[in-house]
Image (cartoon, rainbow, N blue to C red):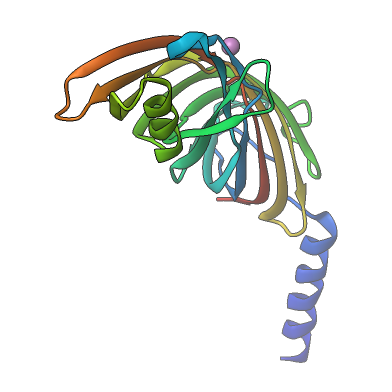
Length: 236
Ligand code: NI
């Protein structure tokens, strides 16, 4: 009995010392963490009534990232970035002034499929990786803020009473780097960074009382965010 306990303890200590088992072909790794989408926005001019020109700016948001990865070989994996829906505030910064109008908000899901290279695949210990892949960003629940409606109303002598915002979905490239730092044979800390090309066409439809369309403005917005995940990884 005493001997069995000693062996069990020795085995536990040994696995702790060895840290993580190597990532190998056929392994699944699930990364979960706080995922932040931090836009680096570049907007076309938004031509509002009376020659007022604004540009859109998009705020950051943090959600729960759920990020499975499958090792196709000892050195290459395929990873999917999934998350609970992000919600971003959008402002319209008026050119030639410090005026910034709360324009609205949008939700989005940015599933990103990346092929990853693990230079230390097949070896125990730290697992750095780089990846390249594709992103599809789905925008939904776009909302217009009352401040934008009021601003449009003021610029049109009260004609505009309402507005709609619509954002086109985006399809683009993604690049990535990250690392898993093991603290047991199956658990690791994870830090991952993506740069994602997300470009959308936005459309604001201004409406009069009763819903008749007064004007429609279209403009391109490059959101091109840095995305960060900080969390843990578990190897199955
Ligand atoms: Ni872009």
